[in-house]
Length: 630
Image (cartoon, rainbow, N blue to C red; front, side, top):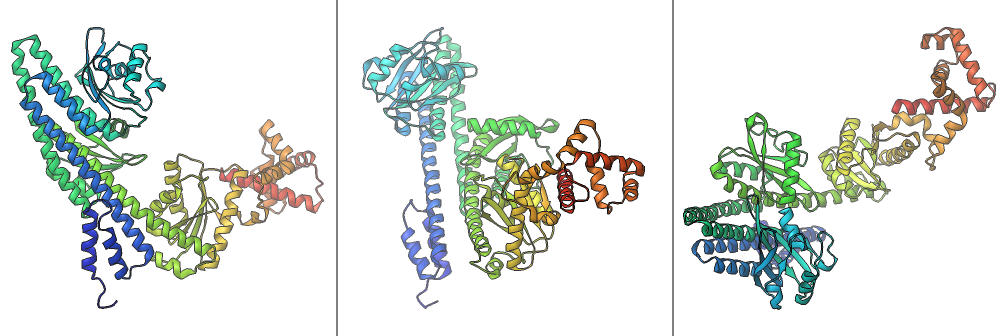
């Protein structure tokens, strides 16, 4: 390193500063400093890509903070304003600004039949749409009111979820609207109306947009409900004031949640894990908080267990409900305990969940909102961890593939592993995408995984190759939803040459399992030693061979419940001695002779033909191996 080389401390400071910058900023400076620090090009590219990913995630968190602040401002306005019409008009306008859609409007239930009429709108250009009446049972508005759930369509003319009405379709066409997102305005079991955001082009609405519009709908529902109560009786004024005070408490609680969210975000930026986030939540909320994986298993086995978790079934139902709604779900645990459960949602699957004991109803809202924000932060932690793991897995896979192809030697593997390779395994993952990442995670530091000819190859550093391979096979079968995945293991591998030959032999053995009807198992390659020469590229070759030689005898056993195949196997195993066979089967020698006579009468070959006897022994042993493996 020259005198002008960048110091590690300066490089670390620049990388940290770049991760907090706006997307695209300071990455050039980081790249230049990495070059000056003599960092290899591949590692430079990976680090710069990680910095850019962190910038994107940080920008998203900032955007979420802006949206939260806007909701706080709207809530404060709702508290101050008294005129219902003015409140709802401002609410629609604020929603219109934040959603960024072409048109935003609020429809209110107009009569006992449930017809919905547009009351307030922003961005509309036709007068008839501003006073549009949607009959009950028609259009997307009625679907939202009936289901009490958000609903959206990317192309209204093609909508099939709800019946169309000619008047509505005409008004929508004149307004030029194409895509709709609607959320209900509901208080308790009563639906008061619906809030809509629309575009004049086809658009798929995101979960964030649904949640944001739902937050405004909650505020609008509170205003409508208060107005109706006030209209019914002057005595309801006290209830309305309490509702506003509750809204103020909600705003206060949301501010507390925001502070905790900032603390969690800072912890992530400093390298915290999901367990660290759970510990922070437990301290701030003053209650027991746990984290579980997608199957409901606790992530920290040493955590405090003074309160029993909910059952796997109820926990799984709560996680699925939370994934759908995006909110925390209350569930009853064992021994009367109540838990708030919120799913940690990844790109395409549930990564796990966070659970908080709900012993204090007074802080229920704070706990719920805090956990929902914490779940988002935990997802970010998982994304970062998965990105690092994926880079490591791909690098290791390339090294192992190079060794197997003869482009690298044992020294390349030694760099990746702390111990030498002593065993190998080949797993048939049937072309499932994502198998490499799942296998690398399951293998951990005990081996290296690569993809070869649409199969997974594992170079193990542990002698318990059967046990660890079966564990990995079960993980893959569960995560990929394919219980038929199989694996073949080879023990006592010494050197790169032995590793290559062992992998090739295990791959041939793996092809040999399907013709035998063997699936969903882990077997040893040594069990196939006598039959490697019979391995064929034709998947049906072994089955056809056994049927052609031994078919009549197997059919006789199946029809009459006899054991001629087993008798023939025992006869060959004991040097074709009738006395030894009778002793092994615990029958009389005459019984053995009768069975042999029946066998030879069923077979097509001659007993004194050496070639036929070889084929018969091979077929019997293949059949008995198939039965044993099953």
